[in-house]
Picture 1 (cartoon, rainbow, N blue to C red):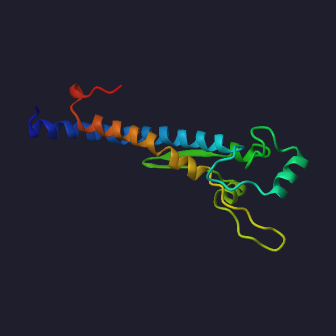
Picture 2: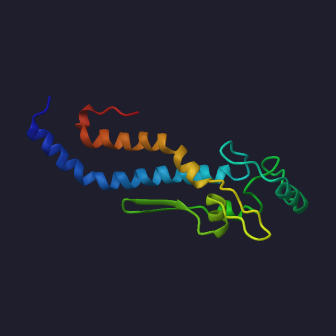
Picture 3: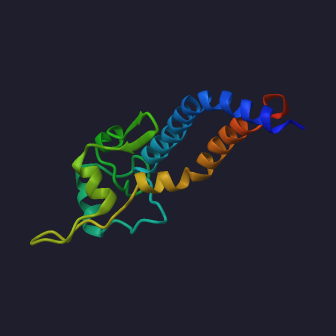
Length: 156
């Protein structure tokens, strides 16, 4: 057992390691989110409404189906998939795209004259949500390493 003084000293030493460890954790979780989001494009996800038959017909006519799945939702040229970026700055992390098409697909559009609108098919948000268990593991390990004496931590 360690004394309160020893624990306080250990926390002082750990505080210096905290920020770099958190930045690495954010990068790890962000990279998983980015990879997952890119992988969803072209696959029918159970959380998404199916493509309208008119959309499937148009994509078929243009040769944009059958590359990944039978309807290849969100996939045409791969440009949107390739536009997904990860940025980590300090203790802030963002996974997203500067593409307007990605925004329209993620949140949907409202119907307008001559266009029925696009229902939301969140691929980045879905990836972020599904990466939470990994984030729990990454940041839980960081917490253990920061709060426990080094000679008592046995992490895989």
